[in-house]
Length: 139
Image 1 (cartoon, helix red, strand yellow):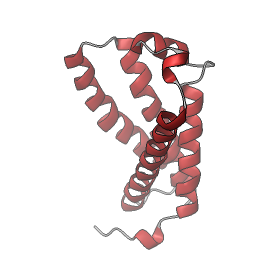
Image 2 (cartoon, helix red, strand yellow):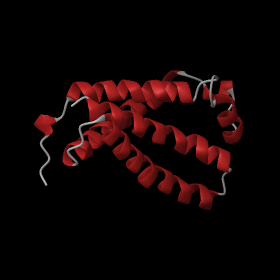
Image 3 (cartoon, rainbow, N blue to C red):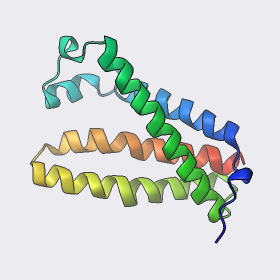
């Protein structure tokens, strides 16, 4: 097994970061899950605020998106995947195999509602699928 960071398509990685941030903005927007998520977490429009907390949140989200995209690019390279279907499959395996499972244990022990689990774990699964598809087809 050999990881060749020189073979990574960094333009695809940057596009995947933009895709992930866009998906997150849509997922947690009033169009989709913002209101149910706020109700389940006890947040309000006022408590979400802005300013330095928002800047910190976006900075962490961008860094996390970059790590996700790079990690999936490496996995896709190692698997020699080069189609949208293969990228989708690897994104699905990562999303379900790592995200849904680790979130499930946390939510079970914290006794949080299933709807909150599905909202918070659903977004990264959708993101991993999208990122896998994008990088799989654009290498």
